[in-house]
Length: 155
Ligand SMILES: Cc1cc2nc3c(=O)[nH]c(=O)nc-3n(C[C@H](O)[C@H](O)[C@H](O)COP(=O)(O)O)c2cc1C
Image 1 (cartoon, rainbow, N blue to C red):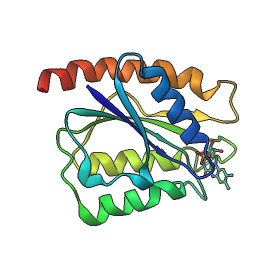
Image 2: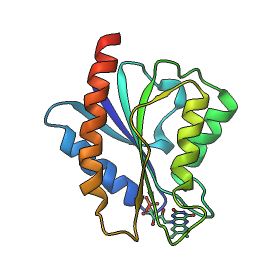
Image 3: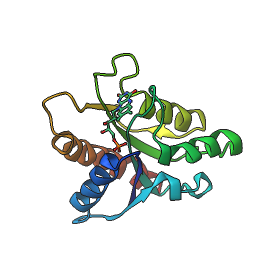
Image 4: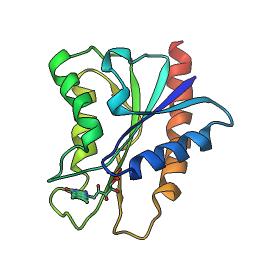
């Protein structure tokens, strides 16, 4: 099973985490980390697992690198039936009302196009005590385990 770690970032935190996740999974899988700004939604593939890592910017919005991707999802309406993804959000609870709003929007857009979310959406809090990678590595392993069953069976 191929894995693409797709990241949406404004100042690089989600990119760093995505690359760390990719390095962690590389021992057992073919893994590529790609900026959402370089990924065309027409290229989603049902045999690949997508791990989305996305921050929140502005007032609960998607970070700059995820915005063209989100716009394409809305304007081109690709059919993502059969596509599986997990999603790890980065935000800060100092922004109370808009905490992790970006990844929430991203997950909703993917699901609206027919994609299936594996596991719960994680909402990491930069003001909390946990390091993002301490939560993200076990999360990634868990989603890969779920995908091995789901995507493996479909193939
Ligand atoms: C100007 C600014 C606005 C932000 N707005 C939000 C927000 O509305 N909600 C939230 O949960 N986090 C918000 N954050 C926190 C970022 O999501 C967090 O710092 C994240 O690690 C940034 O990741 P990035 O470097 O990949 O973009 C904001 C941060 C900045 C600097």
